[in-house]
Image (cartoon, rainbow, N blue to C red; front, side):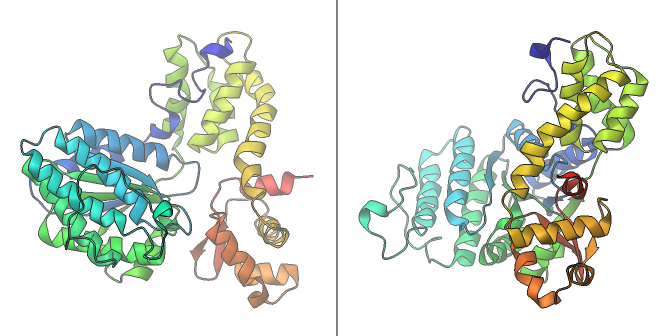
Length: 396
C-alpha cells in the first residue's frame, strides 16, 4: 500500500500505539489533577517499565492533560552524571510561564521568577570564570535568601513551595515530569524525595511524575526510606492482546484499509505486544502489502525488514555502547536465559564465564549505569530492553 500514507510512520497517527491500553493511567491522572487542584492530598506518580513500552509517550500525554486543565507543566529528561538544577530550572520556567498567562499580579509572577533565577544560578561553580557562567534566560533580578543556599535539598523544597503557591493563586497546580528518573544523581534523588515529602505534608498543588526503568522503586527507597509513601507506582508493561490489536487496527482503519485476523496473529507473535515493536512491524507490513487488506503473507514478507531496522536502531545502538567486557557479560546473560525475557542469576553468569563474581562487578555496574540491564531482584540481573537476549543470540 501507499508508503506515503503509512499510518505507522513516526508522527503519522493521531494516537500512537504506545497509548493503546493506557486508559487506566490517563484516567487516574485526571483524578490526581482534580484532587490536587481542590487542595486534597495526593501522591506523586512514578511510571516504571522496560524500554519500548511507551513510558516517554505516556509522559508527554500526561503533560498535555495537565496543560489542558490550566496547570503549569514542565518536562525534563535526566541524564547520567548531570546535575538536576539546570534542566529543572528550564522546566519550571516553562511551567511558570504557563501560569503567568492566568495570573493577575505580574509582580507576584516576577517574584517567583526571581527565586527560580536564584536557584538556577547556583548551578554555576563558585570558581567558574565569567565567560563560562551559565545564564538561565530569566529576565528578572535574582532573589536573595530563598532557594539559593547551594544545598539542593533545601533549595528544592523552597523552590517547589514558591512555585506551588503561585499555582494556588490561580486555582490550579504544577506538574513536573521527569523521564529516565533512574539516571538522577543520588543527591538529586534525595532532594526530590524530600521536596515531595514537604509538598505532601502541606498539600501544595505540585505533582512530580517520573518515568524510568523497573528498578526505580529501589533507587528511590535507597535514597529515602519513606519514599514508598510519597509515590504511587504504575507498572507500564506490554499490551494485552485486545489492546495490541487495537494499536494495529486503529491507524489502519483511519486510512480506510483493513487487516486479516491471521495477520493480526502474526503481528502479535512478532511484536510480543510491546508498543515500539508493534509500530516497527506494523510499518513494515503496511509497506510490504501490495493491496488492501494486509495479509499474513505480507507480515511474513515484512518481518525481516522490521527486524533489520530494530537490529540497527533499537538493539544495535545499545549493544555498540558496551565495551568488550560488557558484551561478554550481556551474551552470557542471553545464553543462560536462552534468549527469553527473563532474569539471570549473577552467580550463574560468573560460573558460565568461569570468573569470580567480584571480577565481574565493574562490567555489571557499568551496564546498569548505561541502562542496558537492571537488578530484577537481589542476585539477579535482567535486560532493560525486551527481546535483547534473542537479538544477541541471533548475531553473527
